[in-house]
Amino acid sequence: MTKSTGDDKAVSKFKLANLIPGDILFCTDPDGRESKAIRTATGSPFSHAAIYKGELNFLEAADYGVSNFNYLRFGIASKSNVAVYRLRTTDQSESFAAKASITVEKYRELDYWTPGAVMSAFKRLRRLGAWTGLWLPAREKGFFCSYLVAQSYDDAGLALCPGLKTHEIHPGDLLKSPYLENVSHMTIVDLPAWDTRVDVLDGHGRESPFQRYTTARKHILTDIQKLMANSGLAKPATLDDVLQIIMLDEDAERQMSVDGKVSEQLEKSGFAALTLAHTSNIEGDEPGTINGVAYSELPLGVLKATIANHEFLKEKWEIRLGDVEGERAAGKELREKIPLEILGVWDRHLENFGTALENALSLIEGTIKDLNAELSKRENK
Image (cartoon, rainbow, N blue to C red; front, side, top):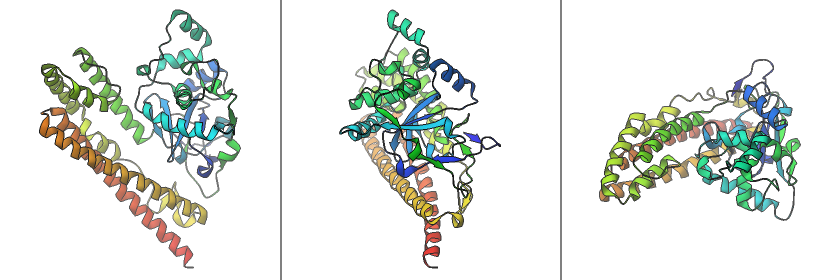
């Protein structure tokens, strides 16, 4: 994320009400060295793509792997750096888009596939890869941005770029898809004068606390993958897989040995406290403000929409907290039957995750209360 410094000042934003699940975001950092290289190699004005999942978040494949990102909290420095595309309207377009926004979820936390991204961008390498059999579309190789978008639609039953395999598709290919049209005019709007947000999407270094958390999990997973591979077990694609693979191992001696080693590694890495470590120091808005704007200065429509968005997030987090409590209860039953150390580590992780959610809920409940107080004050005038 980039702080406003003159030219980086936000002038536009996404219009949440006009985004629909399945929309495809294209963006680029005009000054970023990596972004420039991708644009030059692909002949595209954009270097990155992501798919809108709904619930305020896009899902993307970037350096930290496949994860969600809340682009909606960012402003846009220049409309030429960002675009939103959507399926052209047909009898099935709404169904395809909805399915793609759901199927993409199963790829969450998979790795970023750097070689695949490079080969998709450079057509000579693409042809060489096909000729030598170097193309390895197996999903354990992970994803890059446009591959993730294309694969999600392919899973939904629509090949966005006929004639190309999903792992061959770069952002420029997606832009040329005969099934997509540019809807930026209705999804990107000018930033009102009262909105003084300073973080811009089309800049370098954007990173959320969630991304830092995801990156930390990736580093932990990499070490665990090596350990388990050396023990003759399957390579876990996510940290959740680690628990499943160990629990299902039928070799009791190896199970106990790997359980001890993995549990020790998880403890050493601080896995159990990871969620709290990456949420305890999040910098929020100043009290009584949203994106630096005082509640009292928010237009009435924006105030009501902000309340609705916060209530939506509150409901989402309450559901997740319930899931965590259910997982802890199930884990307790398992620990009584299976004497594995990793189950204890996992329980402490879930306990801390639950605490982080409770802290977040406390903050958002306070914000909703204050926003509603401002709304009541206006309505009673």
